Amino acid sequence: VISIHAPLNAQTQNLISHSELLQMKDGAVLLNLGRGGIVDEDALSVIIDVKPIYVGLDVLAQEPMKKSHPLLSVQHPERLYLTPHIAWTSREARERLIAATAENIRTFLKQPQ
Image 1 (cartoon, one colour):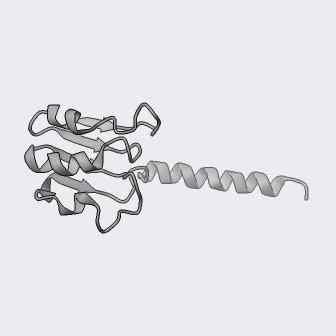
Image 2 (cartoon, one colour; image 1 turned 120 degrees about the vertical axis):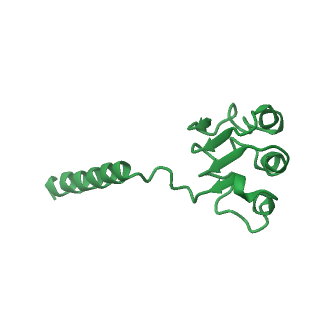
């Protein structure tokens, strides 16, 4: 299992491309939960049909996904799981977000007007 949680920058752009995808073992799982653009989606759309790897993408290079995106026409869609950029929305993450928002509002209301 390869699980990506990295920012997109010059060093990570297309970090996982055609050659890296080909080197993955049959049955390997690739998850990109970091940023779109780290996995070369054009290369992935080709390799996923010729190599039995399994991929979960929560992020894409361009969001929202275009109707013409090559991943929407792969021959083995059972090897691909796409989610709409929601990997951060665990119950714990939402609870922390709500608590921080509430605290920010309380702090703001305590300030002299």
